[in-house]
Length: 360
Image (cartoon, rainbow, N blue to C red; front, side, top):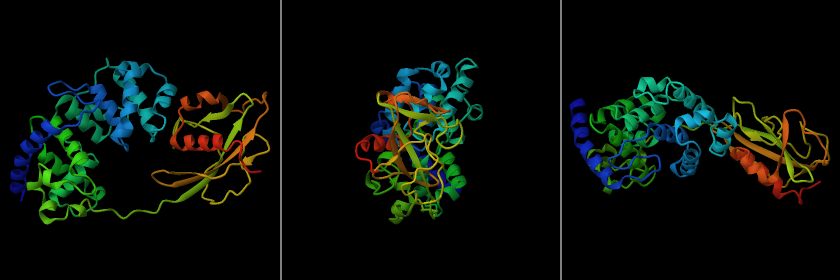
């Protein structure tokens, strides 16, 4: 069996690389053909791409590179500036890890380690990211396995188990496929193949360079793989958000604690997020005493491990009202520069839009 797999993969390698040389995506962090990759750009893109799509990440990557073109520049940036640049992308621990990792690399001369082991020692760099940087930036014989690559491997080998339970088998198969020469190109070719051809639904098997080696395609069962895991039901939580406006257009904000969910992001003052489903018309844990008005509609947001529903209360504050402890006033024209998370952008939009139509 092992000899058969080796024969298949030896055939697949040149076919995939020939396909990639013709069809490769032009991505802003990717080196042009014949050029060496920039380790900083590779690292930055891989961190930004975690749990996110290429389309969503591209403007963020371009903004980061324009503002901080190398690792020393990013290391010198403040946590607040990095968080503002990251706002809206989600999974905010990545922003803290960006800062910590950049400073660790800058402290040793601004050069990234060129081995998987050295890269794994950096803050926020796990097994996948270390393998991706080692292969793509330094052409080390490493085999990163992202979602695209895992899907391809499960189809090639017809692995009859959910990805989360078959990670070891998938990693072993990916290593067996990786060539000694051009391992970085091979990893990127698999990523592009998963994005462009071996897609989650309706894969384009007829144009796939690996179709002759794919067990799922041979059986006509590509839609069966990867095997779907049993999905757990997300719990529901609810809470209240307080949109407080001064006559000059300033609104009241605060910064979340640096660690934990949405850590370090700027938010409107909020209540705790409980599992009680009904807030009714009673504002709880409000930051100031006021005549509160509840906005029409609610804010709904899905996190990885729970669903959140927020009601928004608004009030008009007098011009001289001091910001409560831990809060600050920001003019409406600067709200979008404050580093708001996606859920808080929704809350601000609802608060703004309902200012004249909130119910008593």
